[in-house]
Length: 212
Image (tube, rainbow, N blue to C red; front, top):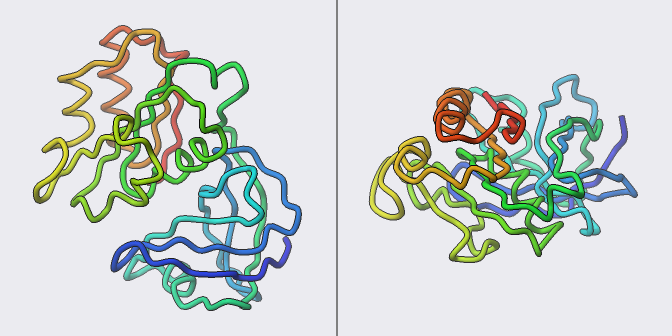
């Protein structure tokens, strides 16, 4: 476990924010996660790395949970505060040969974090990104992604495709040769797996990271 000093906290919505802290030479691969908490705390939580592999800092995307002790404490962080950081961990990785193929990235909520790292680390990716959100306000940092590569699936209020990402996938199945990465809600992932396999995508082309 190492200490990393907070650089900045950037609010995205009333409950979501990006926390930036010193990298201190930590090496990682896009798609991995860190265990993060306040200095001296026994409570740490897993957060996918939001920043790119070439950035001089580390970032995580955090959704403040009313009953979540760690997320609420992280929300109160200020520049100069120390964080305890473990990792990186995980195997939700975009290996070199995959970066040359057609990619479908499917996320719900803050599950977009590893895909933000994918895209900022490898700007030449041939990808389409589906992001399941409640409202368009939750389309975190959408301007990072090319407008023709990002699609919001909105379940409350106007904007984007009206419905869940699984509804979109059922109506618009991806090409069978696609590599599909899914991250976020477990129910979405299970339903999407069934839809995609029924649509002809081999199980070996499906990769998932379950958030909850």
